Length: 204
Image (tube, rainbow, N blue to C red; front, side, top):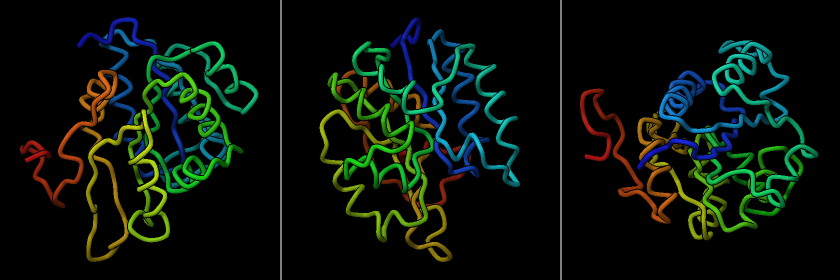
């Protein structure tokens, strides 16, 4: 599949520790010709962490995409009526985002983008990253897994002993997931074993 001129909305929510894995994916999509609009949650825009200052993270991603970002609900609303994207990616997708989308709570920018995009029956790709995926958020993930036009990046328990409820997407499979989602397919397998070596295919 060619990404040339594919219109991608790329929404980033506040799993700050995964940003270093997300940025190379954005760079690769841009390199392959995708037209990328960055979308930032309110927390990403305002929260400085040990993983970087908010304004620096936002500026870096905007510079890679080369397009103005969507930063609030008012800017997000036209995503549906104007059919701005061919595919919407939410990566990382926090438990907060997943809970709100699953329960129809539209009070943040990425959730509004997802709601607006889904009205056009176009694919939303979700790359989960949350410490409560197998806890309080498990029911919400199940809802989205059974929601039409939502596709998950394959995920695994990232630290089963220390954080038994935590799940994190395998970001090396984000681009293959987009390819399948645009064709209306969920990439398989969805559930990955913990602790794959760097030189192995994470799906094996």
